[in-house]
Length: 553
Image (cartoon, rainbow, N blue to C red; front, side, top):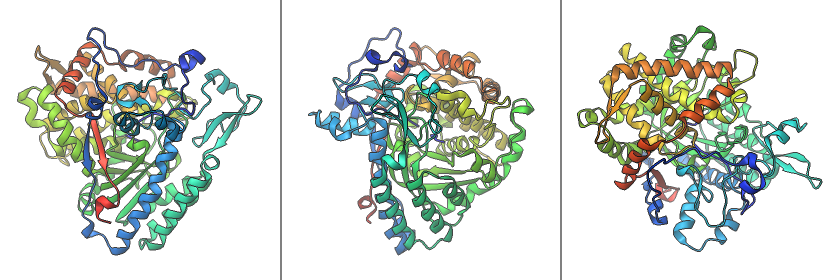
């Protein structure tokens, strides 16, 4: 899951949900209790993102692979418009109302008029608060109305809720709403399939093209897990549910075009073999770890050469854990894709500068790319651990925890990722200084918490920051520099792992709601430290120079 990122908006341009439907008002997740409000220009907001060129070594590609990549990019690019509709509505209508070019650029980065890194604050005059359900539901629909509606596919990942002429709710399938665009995207995949030499990749492209047209993605997910030797890859379709903050039900369109780093992937392959053993050793009662992770799980490293849609909105994804289908995960495991070039860019341009401002000088030497890579990778591995179904008949964890499921799942993956690193270090499978992984992990909290409370990843990091603070896992001196207490961090990791896995296994919606309300916020001191990063012009995230032309194709 995504790690990786992200939220969905609505079709009506100038609706103010505060006036029309109090149930839909987003809860303000960020607070600034004392510090004055800082007015920033649109140019300042654009400077929060540093530009990065996405490239790869195309000399390692065959001639047919070089021809396939532009086709895959064309298919993936279509996901941009589909996500725009899901996240906001009519993109062209919105952009036509904006004269300032900088504002238009910022709208494009955010796929709408709400700042994803600032709790979805509106930055376009006349546009009200962002609907919690994005454009998946009518803006005047209450949760109670939805729950009472006798619609068989209302909880489907792949349907919109709409009103008929009489005002009654009905569903519209994604493949119906986007028939023309999806037909075009499928045709590009089938053109690429004709050039593919790898049998597994050929099968996947054929099945994925069909899935775009019928919203039955499980066969293509299975085929994606079966293919092992392909050099290039594409992830495309409605995948993550972060954008639906009302129920966490609806999947967003996105796409990546990827080139596998064969050498790095070979180095990572061995770690998947440890998953069953590591699952048994999780620091939680046995009843919360009875599920067995699939044995076909893979770890691979890639250069990503194109992003589109959900994964490209606001904070960018740097690692992927898919498929999300629990049945596929239990049958075949999942594939963890490390987007090495994007990861390196975030490390160099964001994480290292953050460490210079916030981490005690005596521990800055422990900020390393290898540790950042490992922590990110095992975050994705950790998505496959723990529990997918509640132990008390409440259904899947996602169904039981509703809109909070994504934030808690990202929090689980973060903390269990550290658990995996520490366990593998004990076994001698990871050999760098253990302080590298722990210091880099702590520093990464500051990077990710800047994503804001509208992001599942941002919220997960807020919760972890305050949990660690309570447990003494770090101290903050008068100069605002943080020092990690490695022993207490280790203990806090175990306690938080147990808490999250228990909440998931019990499907305890009320307790999770309380946890998010208490710790899923940015309080005064932390906000002041984050403001220092902004004052030092440290970017929040990256934007891409990307496409076939950037690759010389």
